[in-house]
Amino acid sequence: MRPADPTYAGESLWVTIDCVDTAATTPPTPEKDSETLRLWLCDRPYRVAENGEAGDTDLAVNARDFTRSEFLGWVEVWLRAKGFTVTELVHAPLSDFAGTHPHADFLIRLTQP
Image: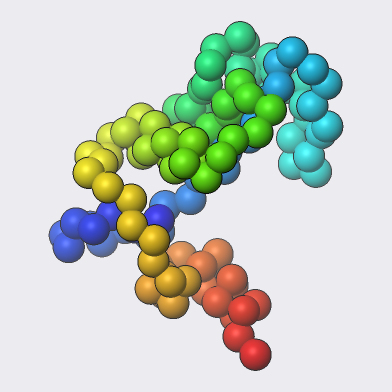
């Protein structure tokens, strides 16, 4: 993501949203153990990692899954928690992110023929 603010000079923004079904056993991911995520969430509806906290681009959501609309709502929650003003989210092609972050450049290289 990138803010539409023309004065923003930082890198692209990245967020990882983990669904944590606290009422069931969530299968672990390669990066995160499901029990650790459940403990970190602590019966909250969601939790945003604090700046400087390990995984500070993380958001854990107490849900089994979510729709695209709900996903965009969680992205907005994360952006606001990180201090950004959000008026709208606009889809942009991957090429718009060239040179804004090493991960973006890697994904662009992967998608090129």
